[in-house]
Image (cartoon, rainbow, N blue to C red; front, side):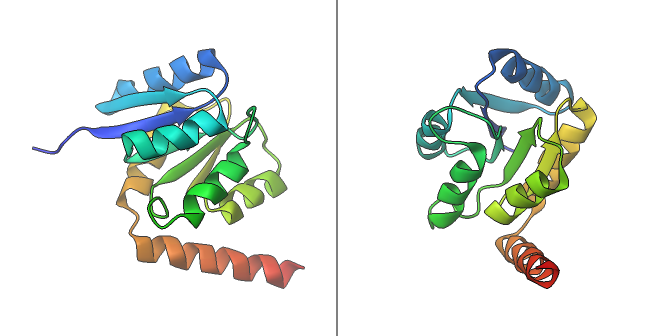
Length: 145
């Protein structure tokens, strides 16, 4: 029997938080915990040790990119699966999110099936795969510049 995975949702909009909770529970059986800004989110990551974190970009106190960089920069949280879910849809926003260290970048409005598929994908990523992807992103980025 697999233990129920814990998903932390960090978004300053309570309506979106409820939507994400609903979407996540529609298809998977996850325990959902929430935080409403980046700083609270960071504290929750350490307190709850979630299996996956879904992060909004535009939040008070600390934005999603900063939060992702904080988590990736700490050995204790470097390999937590991170999904950015943002209303910012430009390619450069997505690139910033992925270069910050997010495993997936999804845009709002989102489809529950797409969100759940992303959660399943990031839960399967190994630290080595995560590192390889980051390396190739960085390489692609420097070739563009």
